[in-house]
Image (cartoon, rainbow, N blue to C red; front, side, top):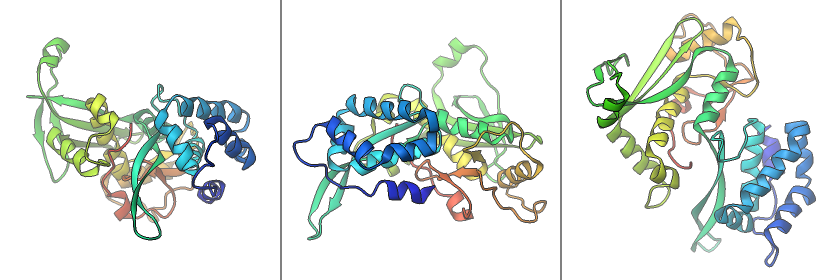
Length: 305
């Protein structure tokens, strides 16, 4: 699947000058045979998905610029969303195609700026892929933690104890001190993670592209902070799947528990099933077979929406 995406996006890096956005998109989606590849991924839903790409680009000047300067990145990002079977309408919150102004170097070593598109998995997208795995009795989620609610935090074991303020009006008056994530497996095993607000702010500063916060962080810090905690929870301890599963088998649940608890003693050969995945911490994308312990523990990126 990954090779198909790479081969599908071997197009001209710069769109011909003078062409309209519609002409550029049509030449790529039709002239390069992209519709056939979308058909392979989405079947009857391909026309609707392609229409959503066109509408999204037409509504975003930055994506229009990316379509002119690096059209292959827009198509590659869309193909990733199609592979994960996630809608790219930004209003839905499952997945985003975001344009970034990236610094590049030409053959002579001269620096220049180029607008490129990237696929960013949204909060609801990560939750959706967790649901599809069929291994959770409580789907991974994250919440804010207010002053006075955190009663105990064991850094070694990760055990957390909270005393939540039940009165919502009173709770809203309290400052946010951090964010916590949680999931429970079908066999009862559970995992929690916690990050202070300062840790999340430092994380954003470390991973931002450019000097300033991205649009997502500027406009909705709370949502981005929850997404950061959720991504850390799933990338280190969770399992996700592209395919829908009504019921997970014993091996899948055992594998999820082993990852969550860091104890593989009950799993003789802890191999992630072919259609089960974990989130790549740096990109928000999915990793399949061959994922290493080092990659599971990478910091998650905070770019994008």
